[in-house]
Length: 198
Ligand SMILES: Cc1cc2nc3c(=O)[nH]c(=O)nc-3n(C[C@H](O)[C@H](O)[C@H](O)COP(=O)(O)O)c2cc1C
Image (cartoon, rainbow, N blue to C red):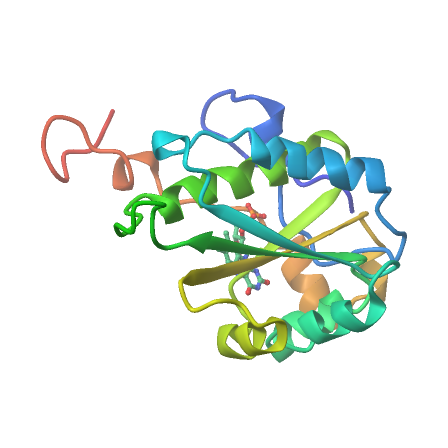
């Protein structure tokens, strides 16, 4: 299954409705030029004062198998199950202090924007991504000696769509589950708090 378009209420660009988070990945490596492209898209994300607080730590299985394995080992068991064939893991981190030494108040926001740019560029290239919060951040920090002022946020699985039939029953069911979101009025208000945008 390579496509699972969102059943949107109104028409939006395919880049947004077409992106989704699969669990069936093939073991085909990601072309280095394409890997470069997704990171370049993230690089051009907007950020407060153009501080670009994001730092991506890339693990390309075909280049750095041992390091890839150490990153994979920090995933929660539920995520390990479907990441066995994933060719690239990207850890998303952010600096928590500005160059002036102040707390970086929008670092998480800026870094989320960069991560989304990465994910959407991957989708535009026909690649699959699946972001994960389910990993051991302390283990990751210690495995890669990440400095204490860096916030470790997420890991993105990047690769090619794979064969759903190779997943176990539970994962196959999840793969087929319909995509859903809260109604717009629960996340967009207008004029007053809790007054649903209509
Ligand atoms: C920050 C973040 C953390 C996530 N963590 C996990 C995870 O640990 N395991 C997992 O299977 N999916 C994870 N997801 C994927 C979400 O469950 C998924 O994006 C959501 O259900 C919406 O589905 P869609 O991306 O296909 O639209 C995560 C997504 C984000 C953005």
